Image 1 (cartoon, rainbow, N blue to C red):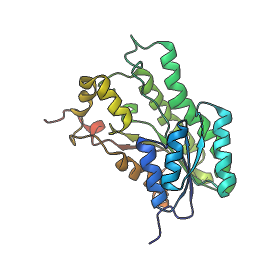
Image 2 (cartoon, helix red, strand yellow):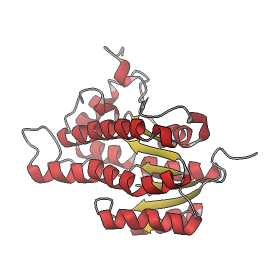
Image 3 (cartoon, rainbow, N blue to C red):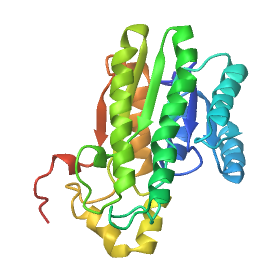
Length: 255
């Protein structure tokens, strides 16, 4: 049986853990040739060995390194069809606006928002040259509603990802390039585990608001990324694609 990404080349940033790793594995199973970009060189070597993906060490806040990542993908496979711009951070020092200092604000903006700008800027010429492709930018449910637990720079950065994706989706639709913002709800990833370890009560406040009563699994978000990467979503662009267990639609969550 043919895979849903047969013949396609996908670049995934933040591909060594969590949503990114689950997506790399799913894309490979669906027939894609995958290039993984991540700052974790050791993790990248393991992912490459396990999946057959090509790994490129990259700091997504560096324009030169991001351009190198996509150039390597194009040179290795002759084309790029999908860019899943997924790298991001959620550090504990990003808290209420009253506690978050300027350095923490800037670091989160650089990794979560500027990196998406850089990745889109780098990959778009390749997609336009070949007449189309899919860009998927990881945002968050907090981009469309207030967070129960403040992470001021994270929330602002993800709102920026949604707006950037919408504008690019509109701008390049007639040239065959689709751009969508994937907005997960709380996901059982290393980032969430770190939050539980640091402040169990803070993390638990997230769960009580999820109507489905649980966190998402990374594989569930990977399935959404697969849909947006595949031709099945050929009429989907400039969308805020929520995969959040109902959290953004809830007024009061029954216990």
